[in-house]
Image 1 (spheres, helix red, strand yellow):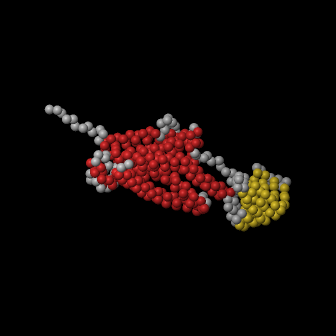
Image 2 (cartoon, one colour):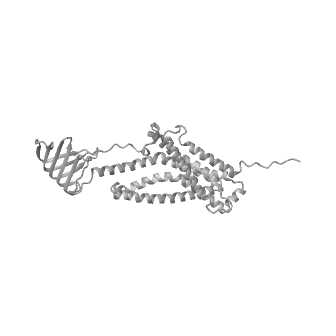
Image 3 (cartoon, helix red, strand yellow):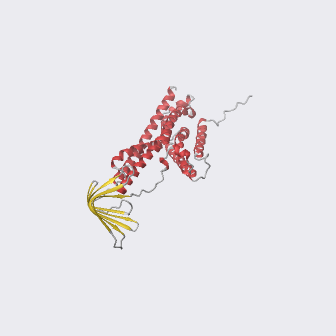
Amino acid sequence: MNLLNRYILRETFSSCLLVTFVLFAILMSNQFAEILDDAATSQLPKDAVFAVLSLTSLQYITFLMPIGLFLGIMLALARFNRDSEMAAMASCGVGPARLLGPISVLTVLLAVTVAWLALVRTPDASRQIEEIKVQAREDLEIGVLESGVFTSPDSGDTIVYAQDVAGDEIYDVFIEHKDGDRVIVILADRGERRQNEVDGQLTFVLYNGRRYEGIPGEESFRIIEFGEHGMPVRVDQPEEEQPVETKSVEALLTSSEPADRAELQWRLSAPFSLFVLALVAVPLSRSRPREGRYGRLGVGILVYIIYANMLNIARSMVEQEEVPQWLGMWWAHLLFGVIGLALLARESGWFVRSPVEVGT
């Protein structure tokens, strides 16, 4: 790689890094506020805030690298135009097509990184975040008992009341449990809340109390006095389908569900989009005389928004089985790739015919 190519590569990489960092800082500050809000409302354990934040950062980096490269190329080449470096390169025979050489090196390196993130790390991060949130929801449901407050850990079948609560220790306990027509009422001086770490089974171990069992309206009630009594509570956890973004590539490959197919193509699109965006950015960044310093940047942002929306539309079409699986989302990449080639050909003058000399 000659000196000029290294210079172009260095300037493009610096601009790409700057754009990605600025966008990352903006998005992460907003995400940090949302995570803190979840922790404040007990939807997320307070000791998991920074773990979730770091896992979320992987998702954002995967999303931001393509737009970072696209805008980074446009900013770097815009500076070349402003400082007349592009004109100097053109005088040496370095046109827009030649610029793709060093830019392609950067694109390949970023594409490999994005492929690893999109196919391996991001799904794993999404799965870990989901596990943390599910555990937080379960803890909230089976819950923290509060003094003087009636609590139902199993959606209404069991009601627990304790006059005083000190951690897992409870005092002056009242428990009512419904089992069909039968009702069980337990009064105890004190008790302990225990949860099995393996299966999540919640049990109240009660001491010095009475158990009343029978059918309301009938006289045959059983009354049992006890020194120690275990009261298991079945905590109903709704069966939730695994979010598609948490599934591994292997699971997506073996699935025939349209949503899984769409997710797989979406992940594969992430590294591929870098090449498409680089191809479009090079000719699009070439400014005209009297254009402002960043005259083409607004156009570039608009082009990226159109491209991103087309990818979302293509994904929706795959999910709804409106396009063949072999076509999938690739038509959107192909369309923008053709547009990029057409722009590059125009800026490079490939379609301009050389004047023909007519002999005398």
